[in-house]
Length: 567
Image (cartoon, rainbow, N blue to C red; front, top):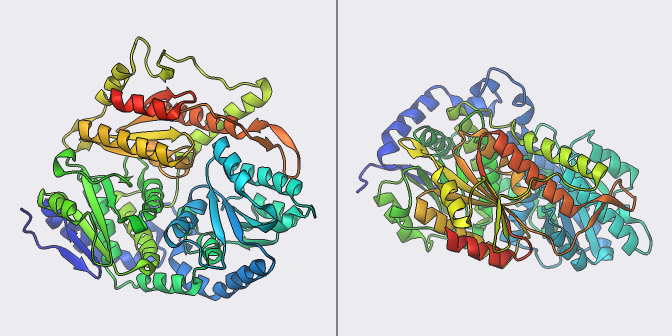
């Protein structure tokens, strides 16, 4: 029974069990050093002695204040495109530029008379083709969104849909159906000017992608959906009060708990705000998973009884409008001694404040762990290897790939020589999960598959079966989008992850133009996706991680069902 007094600040309550005293002491020291005010003042030495990629990444703190005067510009733009007859928007982006718009779309939906917003952040060719068939080009506005202006997936989307729009539009003025959100001086800004884009929003370059939700990257799509930008910023502004200790306490608790081995930050969210978890996942994983440490965010996991969890969990339970169906289960976890933070939201409008609270908490947790929460030093490894494979394909017409170790029931297995069955391979794979005092491994399922409801459900069944049988945290990410989310942590943390990479053949493929305004090139979305999967597998192997690749051919549903039976 947990009788230790909880920490309560505003709508946050922390019942941390045996960790309570140590975390309280760490928070007292945090306050004694005036660290929160130092963060608000942009003092880089909170994290590192080197200011690189810190001092030029701190503008997110002032976003709510600085964006309020720009709200009228965004509103005027939305009114203008509505008057032109547009009623659908397609956001082309990856990572920070797509996750926040996706949260707004899934949680709030479009208001009547505003834009239906579709988000494309997958290079799966079937997903691209399916979206293309849904688009009414004369009524559609494309939002090309990338901070760097050179993200390969985003620019591939742009080149493809620009060519498709030119072909579909009778007036041929495809540029007037495109806008860009990017940093000043980026490659995308130059393309947007050269090809006559309707509008270019130049974001503050001192805001990192995963911290950009309250900038143009998040607010323009939100306004197209019909959200009141001033209200969103006003609710976020209320969370920027340095006297509010809840974000700082949450960050200290997350960081200190990770240092004590409870580094699996598990979010339990009511269905109405469940998409918020994907945004937190990227923020936490990419910010904190580096230099041999990290915090693994676990989102979308069905809540289980206390006995299926090891002692490496830190739970955060969101409650909406005073209730949640998971209350009894979460109480059981707390009673069993697991640390639990409860966040009570009165309504969906308070989610804007949660964006800021979690950004601040993540920055604080980075200080506790001694890492820079604003860089991503390990992300490039998979990109470089994928790029090498694409260049080799363009020269030779094929991807360089090693043969499988064996094939069973149509599933090709790439793992270790000498194995004869999927069950044996999975047993060896899961047997390599590190377990011990203060060390708990995890399993990451990397699904380079087309996302749909049936696949979602089966992957959830697979993750739950692995969790319950091995008492380890299991995450699920669709590739290649997770490369811009949890990919940093997978290669930058302490190396306790074991990875199941699932690939499949696509029923159709879609060509990508070599350059903007040109016809189809040699590269396709299917080849790009395969190169990214192979590149990421090799990057993980180079980093000393355990990876098993299971190629499901074309029968994805049957393949996942066979894996579930083999666990």
